[in-house]
Image: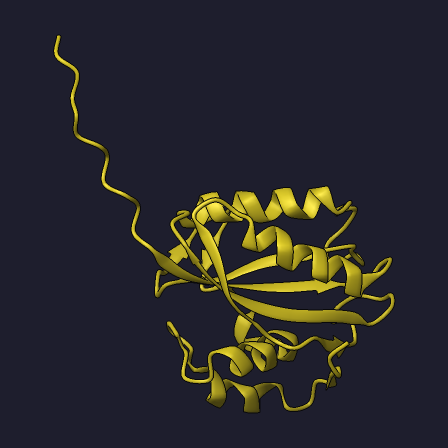
Length: 172
């Protein structure tokens, strides 16, 4: 049987937004390491990273969180990207003892292009993206004209989280 010389078509490049958060250990160092890990994912380039923000835990206790959002260009499909995010969390000691527990690292896939998915393991856009200042402020910093499917413009969504405390940290 002759061998085919055709190569599979390369996966389409997508734009993904990922929220980062940490409130245990050296959160700043963990987020810095996570930026490097995200940039090193196969078929992925880190295109933008927001400033770091300090926020109080929501529906939880523990120390304040440090948060950021990144924009990735990636050939990874949504579920493959989510699996890669979980692997990075695990490498940084992420434990899930209960819902909203304090954590060494939390990586949430917010959006993958304009895809809308709903399933037990992954919902896109992230179902609480529009309710969280710690997501919207850094997202607006790197993508001020972004439209969240089913929710609207990021800039307009900020008014819905005006009562949540968030402090932009100075660069190191």
